[in-house]
Image (cartoon, rainbow, N blue to C red; front, side):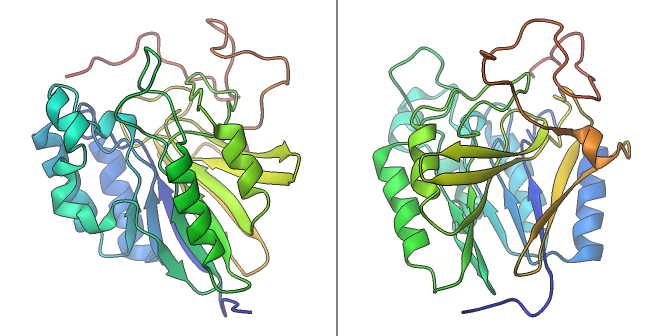
Length: 288
């Protein structure tokens, strides 16, 4: 069994939304990465606002300049909006400056980051921004976990939470419960996600056991309940610790949305508190 000899430090970022990015937050995170030197950075999707070439160019410059191993999930905002031909036939073309990072497995001592794609180019419902786990994507993820060395734990990186988590934003991920049920059979430490722009850390029960779900906030100006933030993960071979780091130094417990009642049906009612910090803007910032 492989065990890390020291604590492994990982950073979990999400929803940077170049085109509406928060440059103060990005400068802060880049300094943190340069000073702390995490073993890897997982970015769980929505690098851009509208998948424009200029937004991808900015994202590529920033991400490739981090100087540490990075894996990037594709978010719904990263699919071409204004070019349907490209969206259907070559949806990852604009990632070309960082193609080797897209859905990349990162193997570290005793732990691995395994991708699971939840953003699709089309789906049989009106809102294509929501999550969908296809059978093909799930099989690819499960095969990768099953191929890990004995004793290695997996962090599964997705864009959309695999079930609703009590945030203002919703994922409504198709086949999310199916995926969680399969992941519960395997050595999965947690599922890392983004999309909803607020941090959370909760356990989801399935018929095969529980799965931990960890969500990162946003590094954009499209904040919802909490300030721009990222997750700092520490793995000592036994325990995965999570600290939400944010620009306004709000304490981690206040940054995390704990859970949603069993009888709550998303989307939540207007004006209903979604987190202790309760910092929902009056209007959604404009899209440029």
